[in-house]
Length: 274
Ligand SMILES: [Mg+2]
Image (tube, rainbow, N blue to C red; front, side, top):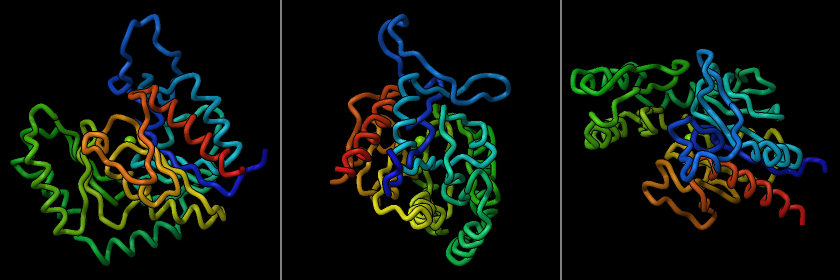
């Protein structure tokens, strides 16, 4: 089967691949699904997907334009090994970078930089919010990603919930958005979105239909813009009970939701051919 004019956009972390802490393997260990390693860091396997996901992913990749869409930086993305697929287009850095056959597209990045410069406070001003004395109490590190956005690695137990609310309000005034994912608090300029980069991919591939899957607030825009959207029954969007007319929520959670998402995405692609 040749590829249909369909883009399948899939977030990576906690959507397609899972850290050990995010697997949510309940029940007896002997009944756990077989897992594949999707990422090695410092010589240690740290991200996984189920073995059954491999064939489901291959089906998506054979029938549609499969596009990984992640907030990871390019370097962090390159550690991820998705079995059997070599996407022609990938979106990293939350939409700040578009990889075409693995190479950053310079024209896209220039367009993003221009929009950010027009509409947002400079990165240093937002970084200062995360490195002030107040935040130091629960913050391990603060990192800038490709000079585009910043994130703090925090101790969730120590961090008051109000801190993120206050940060989001302050960032909003500066033209930035905030997303809390696991141990990371992301501050991202408002124009740097997965949905904008995905629309660019859709135009370049000539696709007329987009199916998207994701779990976090940073995925919400691309889920809303998609023809059909899917999210796991866990994560930031699940915690706020995000729903929409075009949205399907998985029955499973954890790594089994990742497998279910691939099955549902593949079924959605095949259904467009009928
Ligand atoms: Mg995610």
